[in-house]
Amino acid sequence: MSVTTRIGALAGKIAARFDDRDRVFYAADMVAFTLRGGVWHVLVIRRGWNPGKGKLALPGGHVERGETSRAAAVRELAEETGIRVRGGASVDQLGVFDDPGRDARGRYVSVAYGVCLGDAPDPVAADDAATAEWMPLHEALRVADEGGFAFDHRLLLATGVCHYPMVRPAR
Image (cartoon, rainbow, N blue to C red):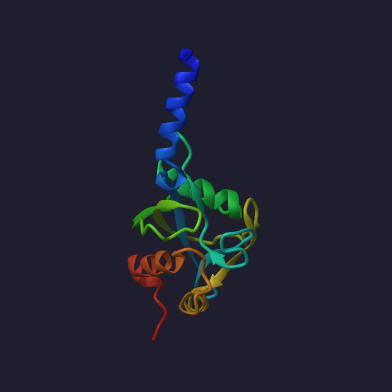
C-alpha cells in the first residue's frame, strides 16, 4: 500500500469520527434601537431564506477570520440594513448565546451587541435580509411573544431591552 493510499485511508477514518455537527460556528448579532416620534424602535430584518425564511430576526451573521465579534456585529448591521454605527455611539456587549439548539443549521455561538442610535436613517434591506425596518419596540415585543422571531432572537431582544432601561415600553 502506498503512502498516499495510507494517508487517504487514515483521513477517511478521521473524517468518519467527526462531522459538521461537531463544528461550532462563531456569530455576532446586533440589537439596534432608535427613538422616532417619541417612540423607541428596534431594527429588524425579515429573513430572505431558511432557516426561518419570512420570520423576523436581528441583523447578524458569521464572524470572519481575523475579525472581532464586535466588528462583525457592526459590519453585519451595515451589510444587511445599510445602517452604520457612527461617531460616539457606544456598542455594548449584551451577552453570549450558546444554546446547542438555537439554530437548525448547526451549533452556533453568538455574541450579541446593542447600540442606541441617534437620528438613524431608514434601513435598506440587503444581503440575506428580504426586508429591513425600524419597528416600534412594543410591536416587536408582541411579535416576539407570538413566536415570530427566528432562532432565539426574542431572547436577544429581551436582553437588549433589559440592558437599555430607557427603551422599556411604559406599562
